[in-house]
Amino acid sequence: MINILLSGACGKMGNAVARCVAEDEGLKIIAGVDRAEILCDFPIYKSFDDVKVVPDVIIDFSHVAVLDSLLDYAIKNNVAVILATTGYSAEQIAKIKDTANKIPVFFTANMSLGVNLLCSLAKSAAKILGSNFDVEIIEKHHNQKIDAPSGTALMLANAVNEDFDDKYTYEYDRHSKRQKRTKSEIGLHAIRGGTIVGEHDVIFAGHDEVITLSHAAQSKEVFAAGAVKAAKFIVGKPNGLYDMGDILNIG
Image (cartoon, rainbow, N blue to C red; front, side, top):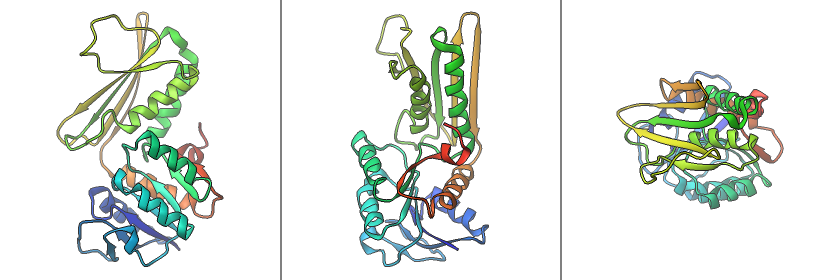
């Protein structure tokens, strides 16, 4: 039995994870952390300072502000961590990578298996198509999403840019520029509206032909299922930084 501490337990993603865990006899949520309070089958703590149990793994779908206390608790108790929150700063990402030297850390911008496959396909396309094709990334999310562009859009851009030796710059929309597009840029565009769960298009535009790679999430369950899969994967692993590529054997 894998015991889980669920951070962000009372949110929409927390509820989705709880539903996925309930369908798996090998998993159990023993506690949650959230400032809100709802009736659950497990105790809810206001902060990691209050937690009185030690799980096998933490699944986090909360807020970037929780990161420091979450990692402090995980290091102190030698607990593996699944970080599924987006919008981290460069300093926070550096801390996550440093923490991976002390405990197993699973960190990805998107927990969907399909999105991570999309990322691998985009990287392969960049390798084949080369600099003769312009790359544009469009992401769409619901009107309550705070960060833009999405962490997934940046993950896709980074995957493509890696094949170009990280020489490309990122252009966020183009409303403030009155000039032609340069060859050494990747365009990122964010759309916010309604209840769109998450859609990402990677467009490779060349001379007289366009190739578009797309992924659309129809519900939040796909992210919850990915996080649960990651929890099963990481328990018992040595210290280090892991992502969905390690599960799918891609990268």
